[in-house]
Length: 477
Ligand code: GLU
Image 1 (cartoon, protein in one colour):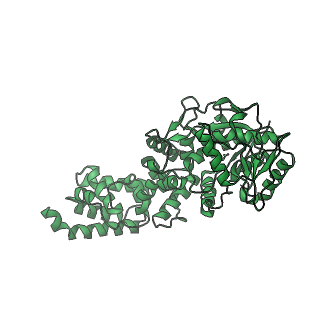
Image 2: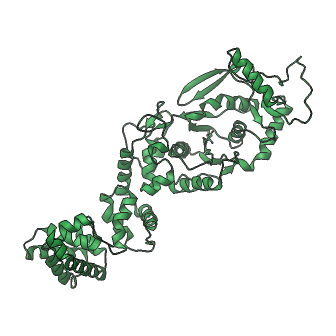
Image 3: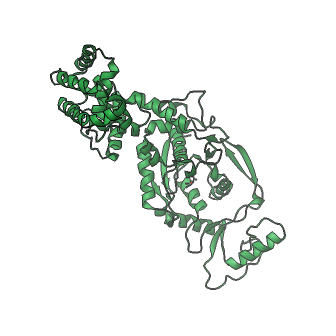
């Protein structure tokens, strides 16, 4: 059987990382089985759906590289098709018009509650053999209800939860079209899953209650229901469903914090799924190993520290064509346009070991693009004291003439240290502060080599000027 999966987000806010995990599972399942993966935008709720939310979903998925095999299907463009299916159900006697007013339904439920019964629609407008229905009241637009089977059971086989049986007697007749003719949520999902040929529905646990109803409608339409896999929710560290309260939950925030697409996906794939005790997977490995059998039936807790660790594993070895554009994006956010800078691959290599996020890499790389506006107070205090002025002067003299490549620059720093009988730190640290504003940079020779002689000399000069201007203050402190 060929496999087709879908991701069906409702565009009512940001793209939640729980949704990303659902998308990832669906995508991996299809990719690993030569299958089809499609995106469906569930935007029938016109009041809550926004174009910005649709764009956030498309941008997020594209950043993550979770590409769909076809153009997205928008539910808002399919009203006619839903109407057609509703008409078919009506014509076949599988659905019916219900004219009950809100007041009537309220009174009905009230009476049921009084009798300690579960409130539910009592089927008063449902045609039955031998039953006489009232005359439809004039001027009332009816809703349309699905005639749920009255007997027997619905069997939902779920790849994660196992087989669950529901008694049809538990379900009342679901409204599938509102009085204004618009189709309701479950009807749209069913028609879409049917038309898109979905074989495996992988979605959040929060949809479990809809499933038996959807299965019944599919069966009424003569369609074999898909295989379902309801994935347990992601919990926050406190064991409560992950939400904004716990911090970042939208994929955009994860990008801004400095996650890499594969770092985030690798962390998410392990949230509730396992392959032995392997933690780091290439995308190919995820595709190769992912299966529904190893999705845990209990919810997983989000662990930010682990997410950063996984991200760093990627950052250390990801290719330039992933890291460079991401660094450019983060630098842009810091007001630096570095797009065409030829040094970017080398900057990435100089920084990747020491940064666990791309945001951190960008912050630590700003000085490659603009001179420090100030010196970190603590670093200046510690590294600009004696004999820093003389050291910087000596460095300036040598660097003005040095051959501008890492090995020669390395030799200069060592020679200045040797000539002044100083440890390497006493030379490299003031130089770092002068160049970057702080005492942390990649190895000093690499740092120098990534800058121009002109910039380096200008920054040393600025530091010397600053030092003499601040000498009195320094001496008195
Ligand atoms: N649109 C639903 C959601 O965003 C998903 C529906 C489904 O996967 O069947 O939660």
